[in-house]
Length: 508
Image (cartoon, rainbow, N blue to C red; front, side, top):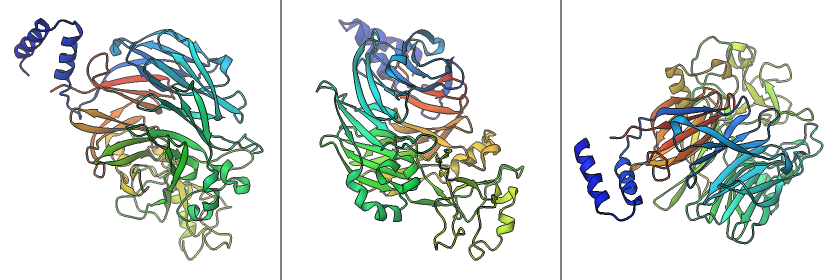
């Protein structure tokens, strides 16, 4: 838009209004015309070292950013003045030692900050603590399940949900059940904590579709580990990733019931478009086909509703159970991994480091005939993001190997991670820029973030790849309407170096 024309428009808007806020609204409407494929860094802030800045939450009422800080000697929420994203500054902190162990997740709604805090005994019940964003005073302390790993407000602010992972202790002698807590804000923060007992009788049927129950004793309830939550626009339905179980659960918030479990199946790396580089010792970043499958094992999840259908976007990170008392992780070259000679006639060659030898697989799957050798091989994660129908659980899209390929072309790919999870997609969120719906995917091992146009959820289109801090964990999108700059903002917080980076698109 011509600068003189823009000035005249704003001047007329100012003269014709009675309230000072009105021209600000007009400015917001003008500046919503942004180019979705031109995000660039506009600011950064170092919260601390490794373990700081994993997750952030923004309060538009106070223009404050609340940031997890679990660095050594700290157990608190950092508070950052975010009025000017290019010049962020710390203005205090909320100490949490009196509430238990580390804080794992944050969420903000209407001047309230919810924090998910694990117990000092990680296998005991944790807490969701609600604070005022204005003065950090405590509003409510709510007991939830063991190890609350993610917390979120519903869009209408009436509920707070926490995914209580229920991880075992290192000896695997204590393994609490995984649960989801629903907290009713209006009803004095009354809590209902749900387990998955109603599906225990379906264990065998679920496992045939790719659901995993594999810990010691294969206890259905103890084995389930909720990881991340997304909620529908009408605040009636939630979907929860059950990461280690390779599934997504669907929850009716009003009735407080788990209505479905959707096993996600497996990804075939021997198909066109799914090629991977499975070795960190081959001295080349080359994507190829292998007789191998990937378990999706998603971490973060986000929902986009289109034409009446909820579409679930997952970051298919992959995660292994690796404890002193039980470990499923093993490299293919290990002598304990015996490959079936019929299924793998070139087994001795495959076990070399430059082929599949270095690849980590699960020892809990693959012996299909029970004779002690592996007829199939299953690795961790899918090196992709996927889109699933939220009503049926059917996959409608997978990015295949595009994330690896884009990072290789950009020079971001870390070949030292080829033997594990590739670029390792971990965080994901969805936002609107102008008329476009965008998905932002944090890639932990390439220290990058990919942006896709997902206006058509079944046909995402790659737009951009951004360099981030070390090991991006949290991905937060702030709409132009709520932004202090009245422009769309993308925040990426990284656990490796404690950096928060802020990006914004160019205006047209």
